[in-house]
Length: 90
Image (cartoon, rainbow, N blue to C red; front, side, top):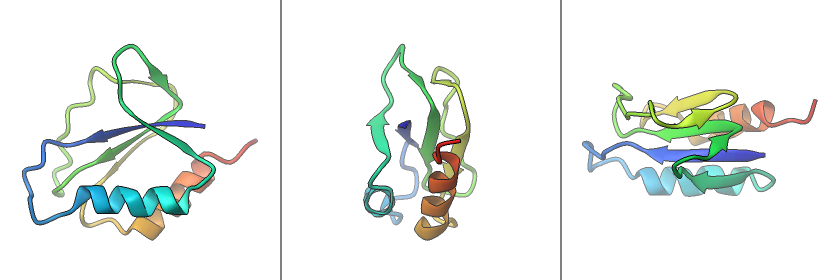
């Protein structure tokens, strides 16, 4: 499973987006994460935002499946569970 990862612009310096993502990665050992690159189609997309507006521009990113936008209001455990369910083989 190939999940693209996009960070927002970082308007909220008090929220450690990198630490959040590290926690998510540790909880999703069987999922491959890749920072978004041009001209790649991702099975799903994880957008890590620093504030509740979740305004990161993802218009140029190609996603075949679900886009999951998270902010500091979201718990890593909830996102881990959601990603596991999203990426379960059918």
